[in-house]
Length: 140
Image 1 (cartoon, rainbow, N blue to C red):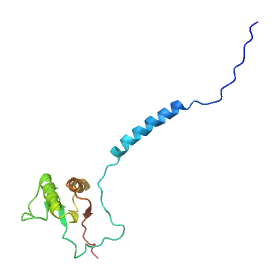
Image 2: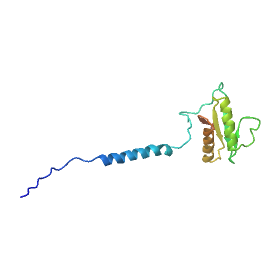
Image 3: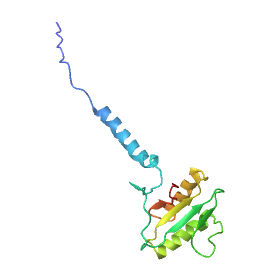
């Protein structure tokens, strides 16, 4: 007669497939995380806004009016609208000469938020490390 031996039940869990899945997910998240975080780096004040120091360099003021035209307070043609390429070129050239110059954005109150953000992205691509936002004091 043939006697069959009973096998012991294996109570171990094979975790190798789970480890493979976790490694794949880790790689996917590592690749996609930098793509998800987009935005413009802006140094926002933590408290009430203060005026620039009087002894600091005069800032570059990049303006956008209600029609979406760009202006820069440099040179003889401050009242003439600039293209995005010309504005970026002027800002980059000025920062090469004087790298510590503060840069502020002056946007018309009627300008859509998107136009202000596009100006800030343009300044960031021109090499501006941080951008300030110009405001008017509230009327009392």
